Amino acid sequence: MTEPSIFTRILTGEIPSEILAQTDNVFVIRDIAPKAPVHLLVIPKTPRYRDVVELAAGDPALLAEVVSVANKAAAEHARGDFRLVFNTGAGAGQTIYHVHAHVLAGDLDEASLG
Ligand code: 5GP
Image 1 (cartoon, rainbow, N blue to C red):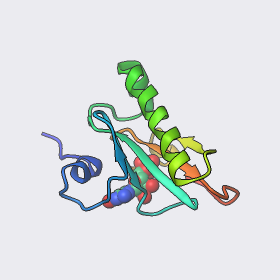
Image 2 (cartoon, rainbow, N blue to C red):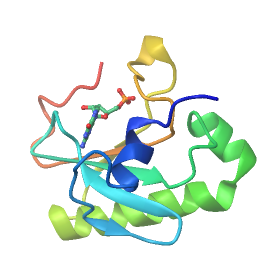
Image 3 (cartoon, helix red, strand yellow):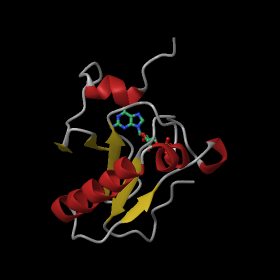
């Protein structure tokens, strides 16, 4: 059996992190190491999908919900405009294989997720 991901451990309360918003299927937290003035993570509650490619193929409605929740979170925590990033694969900087969207907002000139 595989270990629960960090995000599942946050969702169950094992690792403390404020949950800023949630729906039945998705939750939002602040990134612990922000790369932009506003850096949120929008995460499906299910750990079933490793990355956005799997999510898009397996549950496109859930991917659409991630985008919708990201839009609402950016409206609430920033001025509305935002960058949505899915690191996909280690070579692209992915470190947690439980799909999540980075929502980056604020002054993005310096923002990099490489
Ligand atoms: P990835 O590198 O997989 O695209 O993104 C994983 C993100 O999760 C990183 O930006 C990292 O800073 C964030 N992260 C890792 N551990 C924790 C944690 O325990 N709490 C929170 N809030 N974010 C985390």
